[in-house]
Image (tube, rainbow over all chains, first blue to last red; front, side, top):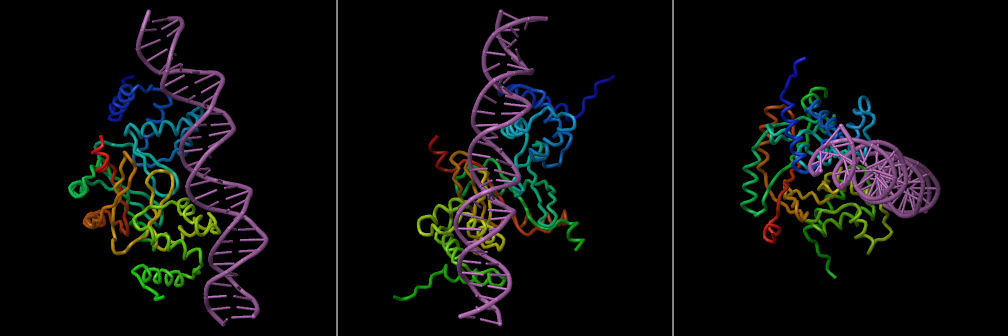
Amino acid sequence: MIQQLNKGDNQVKKIYELLKENDFKITPQRKVILNLFFDRIGEHLSAEEVYNILQENHPEIGLATVYRTLDLFAELDVLQKMSFDDGKNRYELNNNEIHHHHHLICVDCGKVTEFSDDLLEALEEQITRKTKFKINDHKVKFYGICKDCQETR
Amino acid sequence: MIQQLNKGDNQVKKIYELLKENDFKITPQRKVILNLFFDRIGEHLSAEEVYNILQENHPEIGLATVYRTLDLFAELDVLQKMSFDDGKNRYELNNNEIHHHHHLICVDCGKVTEFSDDLLEALEEQITRKTKFKINDHKVKFYGICKDCQETR
DNA sequence: ATGCTGTTGATATTAGCTATCAGTGAGGGT
DNA sequence: ACCCTCACTGATAGCTAATATCAACAGCAT
């Protein structure tokens, strides 16, 4: 059987190296959780959702480990931590190729879609110039009515 | 003693009317909490902080009422609900004159400053055009190092 | 003034998350 | 290949922000 190497594998290897560089161990639990996110690009998973998904094939992984692992990956900028105001943190792969994407939250159905953009960099420059606040990152959420909800109304 | 009418009073009256229009009662608790926010413009208060401030002059107001009142005012767009990732919701007066102001969060000292701006409207138009997502509002958080923390380093 | 009904305060409960701790295993040294 | 060490894990207790419950209360329309 030929070992296929797809796009994700390279990224995964880089993340393994990142763990090593920072003296973290590459444990099976971390591998599994990382793979889960590569299998579900575009989703915004909460810790409990991750835990529930794992129940099927990896019921041995505890909830505390899920929380710890998500935090660790967020700290390493592998995952991006976010919240859509439902009282729980959510995570998604921090895809470097889509550096800045914003979230469009439908206040009607709750669906979250994404929008890629780098327009905010102009605004960041303006802010830094005026306030001397050195900006590293931003989080933008837009609230409104999604296309589907506009139609079924 | 002459009854002075300051800027806040007019706004307060409008909010009383807003409550009436929506069949909510104008209770002493709501008056007190609303006044508290007019006395502390620029601060981002959590429910517990509001409760603690009230302990001095209004210890009879319960914590549950504080939570309910903040939620109500947020629902009516009198207060803006926000979170700076410290696990608790925060509120500030939704001043119509400063329609859009963004928050600059210092990842070093945690201080939150504000920045007024309307540049995002261009971006909103672009998004609506491309995605048919009808945007009503946005929340923007910038993360970085504030001026003070850059100097003391 | 009266009565309806939304509101309140006290408190129990929930939910998301973190701390604790004994047992385990990744991975470097030999 | 075998230790050895210490980071890591799973189970669970604990914590904290927020919500639900409910009897008593009080705006405000009449």
